[in-house]
Length: 179
Ligand SMILES: [Zn+2]
Image (tube, rainbow, N blue to C red; front, top):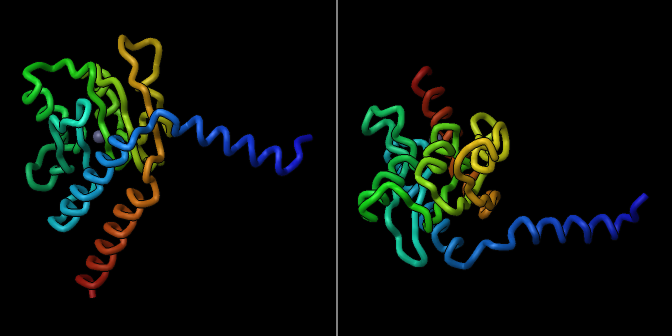
């Protein structure tokens, strides 16, 4: 049996390991994504946003735009990857990182693998569609031809709050319109 304090210091070490490798630039990019996501919420889009960067340079960024474009693939990650590839002049984003406020779904995790993105930093976990840690592990599946280094839970509470507040407001709005 492990003493409580030993267990605590073990989980602290595990947490440090989990987040070691997350740089100040990653955190800055996540903040940028959070800001983009909150703008998206104001225009009625589910508040998720992604930033693709190489070193300190932002190559592409986007918020979820499915409502505005009526495009089922209009997830923040896919739109940001398209913009980044256009800016980079090629689809291979080998030395790039992505910061995104929500754990990517199967489509977006697949897009990250296809774009050969090096690193993924995500905020909140997605219990309904998360394809990086929660339901699937597409970014590190050895059967695929590319693997993405993953850092999850970065500013997770702030990212998750955007979503819970958005859906709570939408439910309240719908309830009010029924009355
Ligand atoms: Zn997605």
